[in-house]
Length: 243
Image (tube, rainbow, N blue to C red; front, side, top):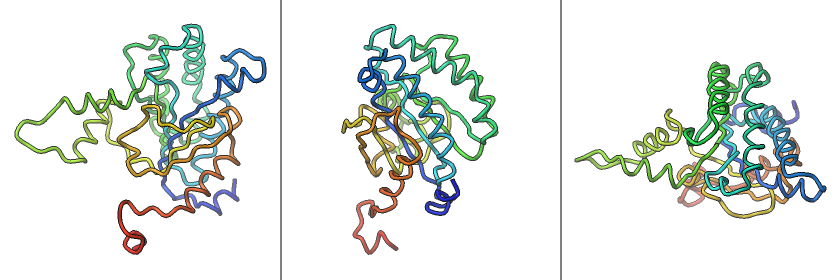
């Protein structure tokens, strides 16, 4: 990991978001139940969370379950929720590694046992300062934006900063999170799937062909190399952006 620190630096402070796609297809291609793909995907989560702070990522947002995923077979949804519950019930690695967990999205529709496990994980890892790990469960960006937009302040114009605060309250009840710098989607698909639409306004987008269970340190470092090689102008001409 020291090589990664030398290449990227430990204080890059990036917010990276990942659409973890391809678990089911990975399992099907191997003749396995889709649930085994989700289990292998959870192992990939552990790898990436362990590596992220070492290569300059300070905030990592992972898309675990979309609000649209309720349309999947009930057995698959139940299996995924059991895996998530297992993860949140044992956060020793996160606690010891300085990782703070925060779950974003709705909690009124998920199983009570999962909601309890989430609360435990958030409390147990609250002291973490090396990495802010945000996991999106029953999350819809459009729904969050709509909730934030329907809470106007009479007689005053809303700034982007204030709307971002409202959006954070609508999403997870906490403070606003820095905009996303790099969005990665695995699995070969090239779409955003209702994920962090406000926060990715100026994010760099990277779509990679490998399925999420295969994603590891080398893939994360390659994504960082790609990101750091890009010129981010935020609507300005190159000379002004560089200054």
